[in-house]
Image 1: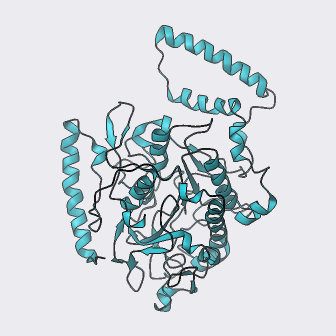
Image 2: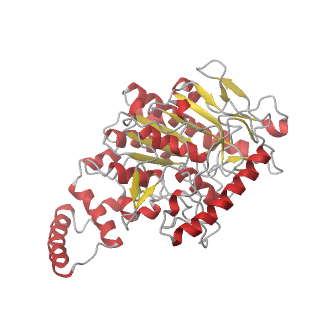
Image 3: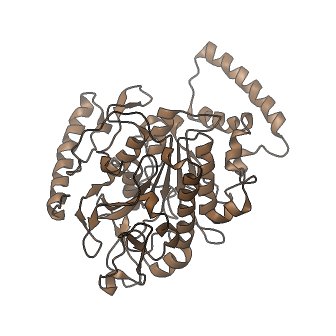
Length: 469
């Protein structure tokens, strides 16, 4: 274990980024890979990445949009002052000596199956840039904003789903990466940065389900042909169109554009109807749905398990409230006000139930060892409770969780100070969290990915937490 002065670490981090930024600017003119330059070296992770075969065949990332508080989830501070501790206490778990928030009784029973990373950090307090850190392990490159936060850009490094989709490919008639039930964003910026394949191109974007009227467990409305056309007629039209376009390409060399990519994906649904049944819950037992929770988030976690069974390489499940609650910052983990009421009544009961059910279900089916499950948000919340009974943005430290895919459960890696506001031991930059996900898939820093220009890019953002395996 190492203990690092947080102020010194922050200064060193700024120095390193300034130096790397200059190298990136100079390197761009020399034709070097700019996307390999955003690595943050965790000072406690100096061991080289060992080459080995893949361990995780699939991964699931549960993303708590808005930024969940570490105090009311995996790093409670029962002995802190009431202005920090808040209204809830800590409870024992299935692992002696490990406690989590009393708002997570179901997850407390599953503690032997997961590892808690209490000292995760990136020091970014804006939703968009922080989401990019947490979805890619790298910094979002500067650009103009389209709302209050930067949106995804093709100049950015890819998210985990984009990398998995390129390296594993699409299988069994399904895309290699899926995000459901919604985008990560709010009422101010539709989609925050870091959610697609970035510089890899649209072909490797995760399939994103963003129809806010969709109830997980049914086929999304956009996947169905118009009633006046019907499936068979649309298949005939599709076949005729493909024949015409093949002729055009052979004569004129017509390139495949963005529109064609999206259309091909849409039509593929009709040509592989059995595969897309992974999105349907009609054959699941009612008690299984109840186990996960008959909620949008719970049903999405159950679909994630079904997608793993169907061969999908990576699934991101985002927080999404149930109707009639609207999808906005008042209904996610961005709890600047009424924090304790929202955590107790709206947020944590649903998340606790679904997360615990997913881990237990995967384990009972013999799938957990080959399925990595991660849990995070874009950042944590402030130790000090504000005047509106809320907690504000806090990228200085937050809790993340990893399970399955070779991860040893029943462990806590890293710790925070007595207020839960700064890393104390074993600081874990978020780049190591993402690198550990790749490590579980069996990919080391020598594995390349390719953009449309076919130039190799080396995507591992940091050093994996090998002590977890």
